[in-house]
Image (cartoon, rainbow, N blue to C red; front, side):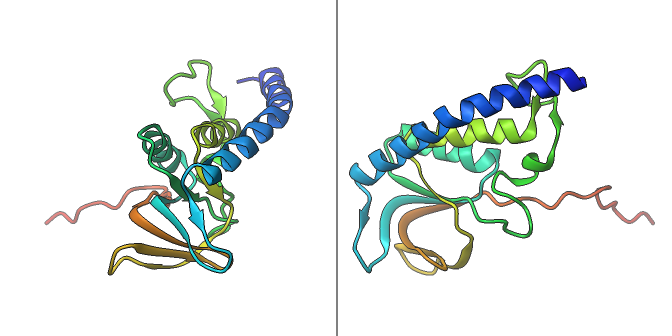
Length: 171
């Protein structure tokens, strides 16, 4: 993509942000009203809890939400110095993602993924998970501010990028 295309994409993104923010707020309010139980001082109870904020996490969120499973997604807050949305938020041109033959900016792609998750009722928490307990059901997932008890959990955490994959030893 050339500079003009990038600037045009940024302008479109800035116009869409207001609409996306309103849709995300409405979807979050709807998710809270439709089956998520949170006591004043107790944990949030949900069917599914997803840890992650990249394409895998949002894909899992969309599928779970479309199956009418009430879910919570922890997207983290600068987890491992990476912004919510994962490595794609730091990527300029993404040219190999299906559906975007002309390419798309990484941050714009993740904004769209997040908006789609929220649209289907995902409760998105911008908090970093600090502890988990998968030894008994319901599973316990906690950040500094929130504790979630979930029937199922999906970890969709970032895979560390390597410049070169490890090679097998040859003899």
